[in-house]
Image 1 (cartoon, rainbow, N blue to C red):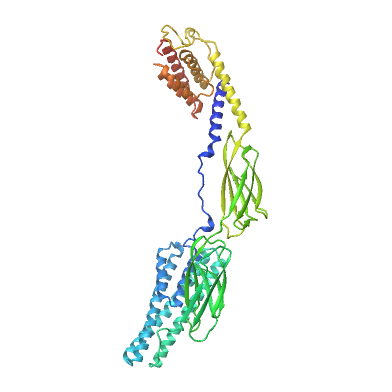
Image 2 (image 1 turned 90 degrees about the horizontal axis):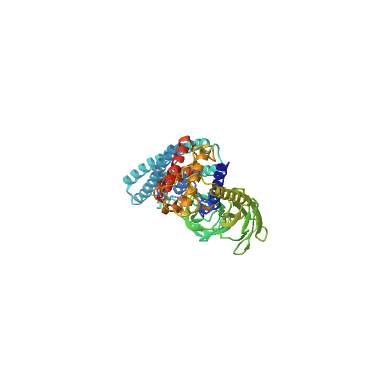
Length: 545
């Protein structure tokens, strides 16, 4: 029974002290990633459709070099294996189409110049080459349309159906292919015009050129509209034009305008903060060329602040009381979501009209005695243009139950050690004095035939230690206080032990293993402890301290 009391007392003491301050060893701020700011992976089906729709838009507005540069970026993308073959086909055929159409325009321009200079044979050669280029361009467009059909079939399987966004960008890709066919057809008509009338004059621009002037704010917030204004102009009559606004590759607005325009554009709530590109595209129409302009725009969220009050002391397992107010530069922040996290327990409230909130969260019951515990307050505004906020606070927790158990354990351990020290001495121990002096004739071995106080293996080990401890306390005059560990007493008594140091050190290690190790004890361990105790008594009786 006494061995069980000692073991329980020491285990409770160590567990309580280690758990009380466990939170101090945790990282001050756990890194995390906000999923709203994560980039779309390059193998996302929507990103793939958006990418090639943008490439074909560049071709239809005769931005051939930009289209080639964009296609070169595709070689660095991490395309999903199921879509890799289709993407490679798009890249290969699209690159050839850009080169072919660009070459076709150059041939028609050169044929126009040579025709105006009455160079008939050279004009004929240029027109023959242009006819071949038209046929190649038509074949390449058909190839791209077939690849688009293949991509559509793969996306149905890959994405387990079409989402609204996938359908939107697929339709946009189809619209771009239609305008590619129109471009090739119009170039073929110009070729026929020069063939029928060699004296016809073809200018270097096969469309009426379009001028696009744009102004937009340099910064914006998610969810708050901004005004993008400008003017679309071209030679000839003023007609209605379609203007698209793209944020990166994502279309955020489209409107039919005539001449000057002013568009309200709202940035998506989930957009990441930082620098983005705002692109305006005037879509080609009939004989009018397309045009595009890209402006930088910085996206940011407005900061918020919070005043938080947390109860300084919490009695476990009672609740922690939290109150506070959330506000921004212009006033309080209502309807903000406030999430509390305390030792794995969560609670959520919303701020009132004046930005205030009151909440409580119940702390879980554990074995800690007392110590500071961290409380996390995460604030998520209802409006997307405000930034999130995370606040850390500390409260001192006190556990009366664990403290009571620890007090009982300490008192029990003290009583146990007190009884050991005041127990009658064994025969042969009467000659030990209060100070370490040579007592060569003294015999400290226990009398044969006396029953030990402990009968099990762990009890025999502890009995051997207690016997040795009593003799050492008597000889050295150093008593073992209730709060002193076995290792601390060994270090304190070592300077006054001579040849008894080695066996007492080994015996201390054996007792620690018996108390704290999970391994099962055997008869040999108990016998070894008793032999070490006998050796300590013999060395002390020889006066070797």
